[in-house]
Image (cartoon, rainbow, N blue to C red; front, side, top):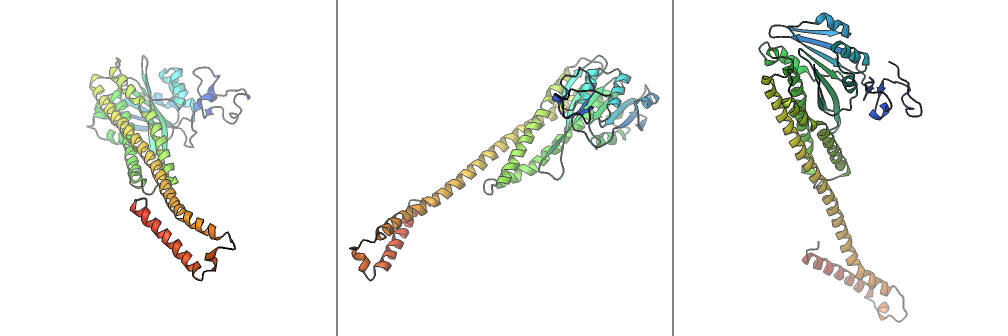
Length: 370
């Protein structure tokens, strides 16, 4: 596909017109235009097909959607997983093969979607965000849009890149007696949602590992780096809530949906995922309150340190004010100052200086000003 944009509106898109970084870059194009919007990952597009029932389990790697025709089997649940969205022709071919609405295909390639559920006559379209922690960074999160198409005997998933997110599902499929092998495609869609939501709890555990030491140290060892960490966690929590909160509406809609694609016995499992999402959102709210309290503690700590510094400086200034006055008087060098002719005037003056300083220190100590 080759699309031509006006150079005055999109001057930065001349290198790759099928991959855009922002939704705003797509302004002016007709609805249903298939262009990948989001981060371009280095991994190549890979298609894996898993077919199963209670007695059979097969897994294939295919290079084109045309090969999917040869794998059709009405007695098996078919799960097609597409890792990588760099090849928009694969998404387009899947849409043509399964009669998917063009607007759904457009949303699959636009990776800035919020979690949502759309009902169509023959399929359900779900969007959910996978969340992972970047290794080697202090709680830096990485998001991945995962799109799910649920059909009568098919589930098609689209991921931005290849990773091990679905490994637990493949492990469950190895068990012949598992519910996954006994139930239909709606249970597979549940298992995918549940696996992604379970990863949120892993992120929560990492949050505890970061926040607990911060709470212990921020009052006594606050620093600029600590404030930067607090601000980074705050931004991450806001982003997590924005990407997780819509899941409550999505799962509530699933449980109310009147569609033959969802069996009654499977809906209770979606309710379990709904409970997990509630737990995650409640935990995020708790973390946000803790981070706000830590931010306030940091500001109070800085203010207290400043007050302590100003108090010490004020005490020293108060001690030297009378000393400076005496030194200023005897620094005027008047001719008829009798003290200038005294033999012990200089040591006597030092005694006065020391006595005044000590007296003021004792006074401040008695008043508990220091």
